Structures are given as C-alpha cells and as structure tokens.
Length: 409
Image (cartoon, rainbow, N blue to C red; front, side, top):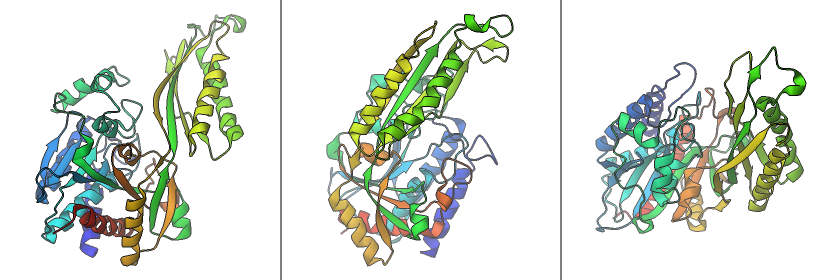
C-alpha cells in the first residue's frame, strides 16, 4: 500500500498546483486555465494507466478500461475536479485521484474486467462559476437539459459554451448518457466534518445524503448619492438584503431536525463607496435530511423575502437547484462494509450533510460512497487536509469493490 499512498500524494500535490490563487488555497473554476491544466494532467495519467480517454459536451472526462462483455454497462468511479474559491486540495480531487489509483491497480495486477471500468472526472460540482452546482453529473443523467446548460452564464456574462470554446472543448458532443450504460457509480470523498477524526475511524460508509435547495435572491431599490439623499427618502437594496439575511438563521433554528441555512455569496451593485446600492443578489443554501423540512424552509424564506417588498424595494427569488435526500444502494453499502472488514480497515456508517455527485447518479444507477477523515473537520479552505494513508485505505476498499462489480475474470 506504500506505493499506492506515494502515488496518491503525488497526484494531490500535482493537481493542487493548478490554482489561480497560489499560497491562498486552490481556486480552480470550471473551464478556466487551471481547469485545462488539471484536465491535461488527468488525461495523461488515464492514458498512462491504459485507459481510453474521452470527453463529453459538458467537459466531463472519462477514462475507460474495456470489459470482455462487449457493450456491457460500465462501473464508474470518480468525483469532481473543480473547486470553491480559495478552497482546499482534497475536496473532489481526492475522489478523482482515487479513481486514477484504482485504474493503476487494475493495470499493475493485469486485471481484465467483464464489465468496463470507467474513471470519471466531473466539472462544476461546486457551482462556483455557473451556479447551482452538480452540473457535470446532472448533465450526464439528463436532469440538466442541453438548453439549460447552454443558457448558463457566469458573473461576467460568459456562457458555458463560450467558456468551453476558450479552452478548446467541444460543447457539441453528446452530454446526456443512457442509464443502461452505467452499472454502478462509486465515489470517495473527504468527510468535510469532524466525526471520523473524533472517532479515530478511517472510513465512513455513507448511508444517505442530505436534501438541498439553492436559491438566488434579487433585491432591487433605487441608487442615490450617499451624502445628499435623506434617510427617509431611500430605497436601499443592501439594507433590505441585510435585514433578510439576518433573519434567515432563525428559520433553520425554528425548523429543527438538523436543518441549516446559509448565505455564502453576496453581490452589491453598483458597489461604490458613496452610492446607495440599487441592487443586491445573494444566495440561500438550504439543507436537511428530510424533504419536508427543506420545502418548509424554502416557503418560509420566500415569504420572508416578499415581506420586504415595500418602500420602493422589489424582490424576486429563483430556485437554482432542488435535490431530495437520497439513500444510497443497500447492496453496495454492504459490499463496501464487507470489503472494509475483510481488509481489517475500521469503518462506521455515516450520513452526508453535503451534496455530492453520488446523489445525482443515485437517480439512475446503484451508488456507493465512502468518506475519509478531514483534519479538524475543515473543508472549503486552504487548511483542508486528509492523511494519504487514509486515502490509500479508501482506495483499497474501492479497488476490491470495483473488482467485484466489474466481475474481474
């Protein structure tokens, strides 16, 4: 396992260098220069491990090891390789690296699968550039239509197709994939929480993934001079937005059941120090393990926002994403636990409070997911770190599960 651990560390370190914010964490936005650098590295390693490389019309990368069963459905293994701004080196990337390492182990051991094995590296899971999140996986299963994909734009008004073209990607390629071409999907991810580290357990077998919604809220008022507009004559969009945002946490507290709500992105226009803001756009992220709680909070959030439509203030809300809570496949969960026990790697069952590509694939195929510990539970920050030994242990479990699912001959 030492050689495997060494390769994993090497991949993580190499990919972390593809960032637009050196020494300030990993910032690798979809279809950026850094995306292209990471993309080329991933494709090079896929080829090195004997995989046939292709990309789809979304920019997702596939490395395929053909099976002896011609036309058989593939076992997919991987994650995403985009990041949040100033994020860490492990979120998503560790799962892509895990897929690469499973392929390396298949190659080293000269294994010939009956069903194809495909390593997959997906785009825009975070939603940091085009909003909503999980774009790569949603496009694959068809829950994000080709027209919706085409209409997505970043904060600078650049469309997905324009951004793809700038780094040489072909958006005209097929995007959606038929479910009967996928036998199963496996994903390894860092926990992004403190549970495994506190329990001193290296592996968490994910039972279910939280439901989530993402809203985009627009508050419009009227611009004016900061010095000459009396306080009683103002329609300040930022003041109205601040009042709304300040009340959002209470909605989650009142809902209970572990519900959470977050405003993580805020844009102010025209953003001048001496100008009364005439427009504010902000995000609202809502999560809970129960669908009814997510829907309750969506409704209460909309009502709260609409209650501030007065004194020249106009409000609107757009739902960018809604995903129900997902329970992962029982047979694959049992397989992952069985392999952990056989390899004498301690594990526990765990639920995910974060959304992942695995939850999207669970709509169309059998899905299994494992977590490895995050140091101090930190993620989405430069301090994010996971022990390569734990990653290697996770890879060993996925390798054995992949051998079983591809029915290695």
